[in-house]
Length: 93
Image (cartoon, rainbow, N blue to C red; front, top):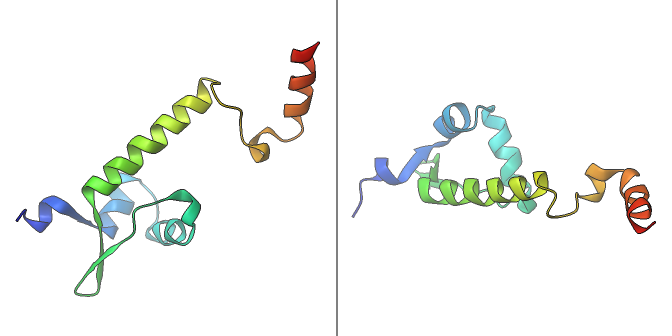
C-alpha cells in the first residue's frame, strides 16, 4: 500500500500552496457540485484531498479553459452577456 503522504494532501496545503486561495474557498467549491472539485477524505476528523483526483481536476479544467480561450466553444451565456446575439447576427450577414 502506498504511503498516505504520497496519496493525500491536507486541505490547508491544497488551499495555500496548490491553489493560493483561502481555506474557506475549498468549502465553497465542495458545496458547488457543478465544479466537480474532488471531495475531501476524512482521516481522524481532518480533511485531505487525493493527489490523483486533484491532478485530474486540474487537467480537465485547463483543457476546458484553453478550449474557451481558443474560441472553439461558445462562451457561457453569463460570460457573453448581450454580446453573443449581436456577434451571431454579424456572422450571418
